[in-house]
Image (cartoon, rainbow, N blue to C red; front, top):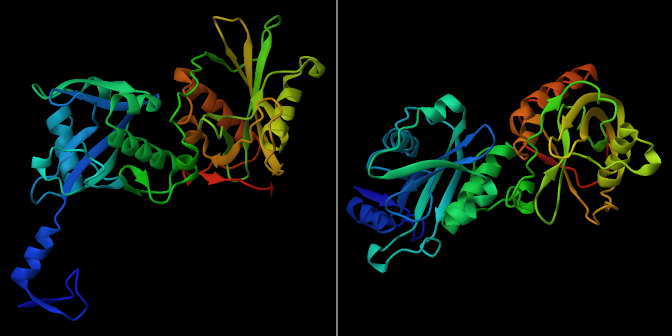
Length: 364
């Protein structure tokens, strides 16, 4: 038999099957697989292995005749002692020979490495991990911003790109040496490359007690589709909700603070503002109040007078927004309060969908 249209020849050129097979074999690549797992705080599961100084995601080489998804499930069972179906892809990375330094004797031809979504694991799932003796020394969870210090450069780029793809919600992404060929706004700004602000404060869904000073006023600003406005700092990729510190002329009126900060930071106009509660800081006795409101319109992206920055404005579901913050155990309570207020505003709950950038004026 003959085969036509060899990869490096003009259409219609005939090749015998043996020659065609040999040609394709000469272009063969390695195939690898890995699994991105996070805990409920958004930290990434890493393995400390006996054969390499850098940390790794769970995963490894795809065996002969095995699909990447089958290989991912097998590696989970072999390395962590966990049986789980692997069905959701996050990224496919073309790792070039130059992108992965290897000994010359290895003759590394390049690799297609698939990254699968292992999901968010709760405490029971984490407690069930049984690292493979002799290979996996320990398993730890790391902040996304710490991955470049713990992993090899290519592995860290790939893990962060896959994590951003999971949060962005636009489906699997294609990478080249760990970087997306079609970057999203989260990639472009470098979300999660710097440490997330750690706000592990108790949330109280009741009025601020008399005598407790309000130091911050932030708002969950809902668009009509149920997503919320999130601001990204262009220099660091850090995410925040609109809000800030009260000014003297506001006479201790945190609603006025939230309205002013939304205008200054995002040129956002709010309506139907509803109080959610406050966070208490045990080290510096004060209250950090939270509101929910309906977005009515956005003007042109302004320069924030407090920071001199022009924030990148995005819409994300409240759940996606929480993945950009490190708010600790009280995050769930605050999220519930925000959804209750959203319902009172007559705004539907948003299905998970791709994050959207808002570069210009928008009205609803």
